[in-house]
Amino acid sequence: MKVLSLSVLDLREIFQVLCSLETQAVALLLRSNGGAEVERLPKCVADMQAALERKSLGEWLDAEAAFEDTLTLACGNQRLHQIAQGLREQIVRVRKLTVELRSDLQHYTLELREICALIQAGRAEATSRYSAHCQTSLDNFVATLQKYKLEAI
Image 1 (cartoon, one colour):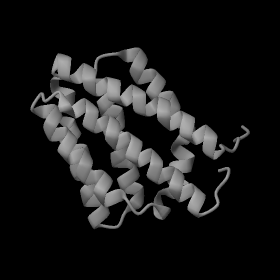
Image 2 (cartoon, one colour):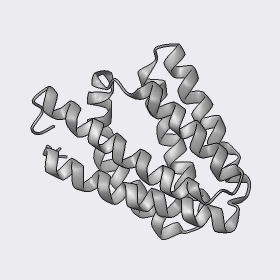
Image 3 (spheres, one colour):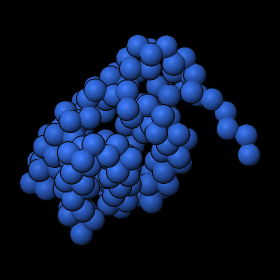
Image 4 (cartoon, rainbow, N blue to C red):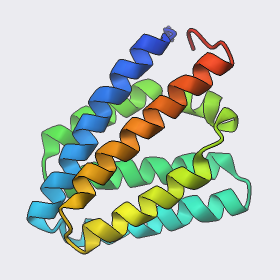
């Protein structure tokens, strides 16, 4: 199997679509209450925080992936979940290669904790907060790639 490199533009486009899907998942969750899956979101964030405290970036990535997977699964739209999974599979290698370069993991995790609380409280602002979180994360990710002159990964 041949692994193709992804340019910064490719990554930006993939993340933009993924952020749109995940933001839509939040909106759908708020309409449906998400059932038992929603209860898993705070645990995923707690796992992310625990991994940071242990300085285990591999575990942090696993917990982040579990959060994103749970989010899109809990929204109840199987097609959205499948498309999001496909996009995440395209960037998993890049995330593994760049996680050590990122300086925003603590803030990223804290924001997700706050967004989880909004989702659990059924607060509509969770959607806009998640969208803003995604945009900030994308901007930080691209800045990191550019800082280290990683034009293609």
